[in-house]
Image (cartoon, rainbow, N blue to C red):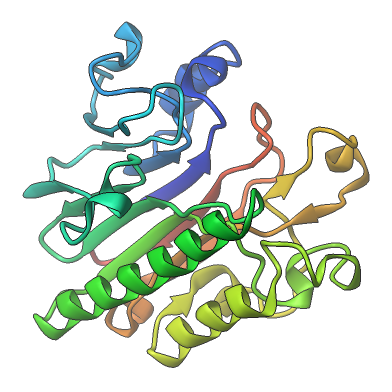
Length: 256
């Protein structure tokens, strides 16, 4: 089973850059996209139904902002929108939860904290609410796959210029501490587990031709719970795929 996650930076813009053709050619079992910028009820007609896929959309209250979607070949047993805890986390269209027989999948567009201190604190509160909810599901016996744009580079290997960005949201110690915390709780960064010393990025600034110079950040992840580790066959970053300021990341799971 191949699962792909991709922040498309606007699904309408991605459609003009052969997104649909790429999806059909790549044919993942599940594709999770973030930052669709699609409000509920305004899904592009060509994506309302996609051959061979069950499509789930979650848009926020604010038009043209945030939004996530999932394309899955198997119909999920259940779909939830948000954590169901606090409206301030669920109203921005950042969270899709799909329940399958062997795992529960989260597609999350985690907040960006660069705007100001208010948004940074919102991001940190969102992180804490997410982990609390994940742990509730684990206590109920669920195996989890948590993918998306986490908006934080975890360690120095995960961005090109760590020293220059120590005081920039996305690489602040307090944000990275949360990444440390979820790993202490047992969640596994699939790419880093498979490629402990590989330097690869999944996001590059559009303003500085950073992709051409490979001055990037690894902001996109698949985390899994330990019970799925033995089923992980591969994980990687698809640097060759263009069409957004992010590139897709993936994990392959066998025996599911």
